[in-house]
Length: 474
Image 1 (cartoon, one colour):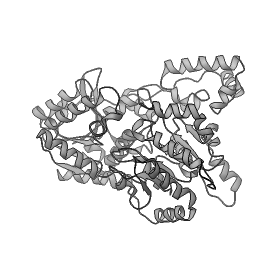
Image 2 (cartoon, rainbow, N blue to C red):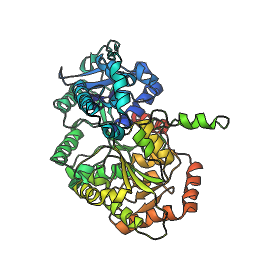
Image 3 (cartoon, one colour):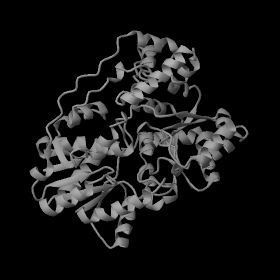
């Protein structure tokens, strides 16, 4: 029997309705593994914090999910009633699973509508008229969720030699480590852990609060109950092996590189030469007006949480220099992602310069469809981080046929290969030169795009096959 841990995903969807990097990796791999290994051989396991017990449910439904859905997962695991996205108030879909936040933001919008503050709604891609029209409708009821799937204790159902695979972030969860240790010692369960990166130990200056110490002790203790480890890149594997040598606890490490090609982040573009107007309108389906407005002029896209490790202050400094370069037909710089931490220098620069005089714009928390639209319409992307465990936005960019400016450190060259323009993350002038080359030389950019089009990119099916091969060979 194979148990795939879902703990971090279930904690994540208690408040969130969209998916980020680590959750995307976990979901994409597990749903394919269910098909490849057979649903009868797979269980979805998780640490039930309320019952203080490690439990599992049948996995068959996951193979039928085309993409990540917090609503479906909440229903299957917890029988939780949810509000459908289409039944949520305008601009409120992101809060539909959070009743308190939904109520608070409803009151805020009611107050702005009463005051006639149209600009408030315009910034969110809506209008007072749309808000009032929704209010006139009968309040949308919560959907009746199917009964939660029966859960079983893993300790009662597992047998010696069964395998538990954790692909997510499971540190600092009260009681879970002790449970895993007991499952290994008393039940003979073989436990494998995927390590996405050792950033908290290598780029500590970019980590908030006491997280680095917590990560260190989790990783150290995991060598006691883990049979072996999986790494998402050769670079992460090297870091992990060096860590294990330091603590004198050596475990096997299998490398399974992540994907370069993505289906979850998608656009609605439909190419129908016979109906060009309808095709164009279809591509805008599901887009907030604020996202559509970002594409009014050419732009370069930066995707990811806006935190100091992403090196966005240096990127902005390079952009400021590019804007001042004579005879350069400059695009804007668009950041797509949620606000992060330790970003004071960047935020102060934006405030002092008026977002570089309007040359920088933001798409905060875009949906998968909106993100796909931004990828599809950008000139190229930029990922100039100080360090990455893999670099999902680089692969997403390639999957849309777009090249990128990429920092030449950690795992990022494993993702970008010879399909992108590299730079030194610690040099503003190097970032400037790489961006300048792709802006000033459209033929060079086109040549890289043509190379991308002719390259077979690594898919999530390839990733799942790699994980299954490593698990079966163990």
